[in-house]
Image (tube, one colour):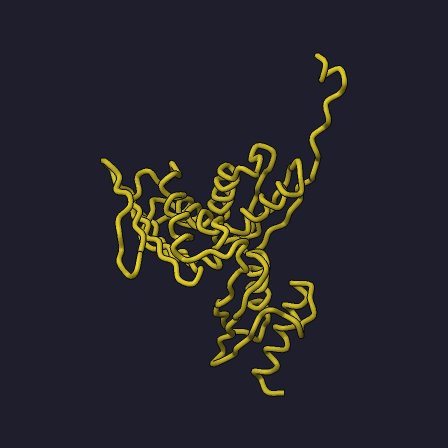
Amino acid sequence: MDDGKMVRALVRAALGRALRCDPDRLPIGLKEEGGVLTLQGEVPDIAAKRRALKEAAAVAEVRRVADQLHVKPAVRMGDGAIRDHLRDALIAECAFQECAVRVRDRGTLESVRTPIGTVRGTIDVSVDDGVVTLDGSVPSLVHKRLAGALAWWIPGSRDVANALEIAPPEEDNDDQITEAIRAAHERDPLVDAVAIGVRTQSSVATLYGTATSEEQKAAAERDAWCTLGVDDVVSQIQVVPPTAPTRETRTA
């Protein structure tokens, strides 16, 4: 077995364990060239994408991983619809009220919102085959991560390339990641942010607390996976359905 085949076999086995599927039936293609391993294909969700990239990079024989993985969209949408949904989400989000928003339509960058008064950044949105690209600058890492989460929340998004710069620059750390996950939880209508805690260590986010349903728990976990810089998510959230009211309560 040549070196390239050996590396692909090792990675395929690691991906099979991470995604809990037969290594020979992975929805991921592997291409190795010049020490760079490229992962291609469409995976079920962002958690699978992040896990696949992490496991591939952990194989000692892999020098560098190139990401060409896309996520299967919850709803198939055209690029224009994805762009318009994200445009509206950015304009509605109060955290971006001092940021200009522009969208690329048919190759032309069009301004859709210019703040009155202080301008603290510009977010440029473009979409190509379901892949959202964010360019420009924002005032903090939390803003950058929140913009990325909003892009991931669009049902038709297949991937998000978040190239937003931070002006002025900030040093990234686990606390920044934790703050961004909390910001996403606070904005997610499916999540009770008060009931769910977050801590991050070495880019691994741990979620704890309670959720009233499996749907709410899954939404909180998804928000963490959508946060740029998160390598893994450990969920300790307990599902505690709301208690049914007693007869006395109902008749009070």
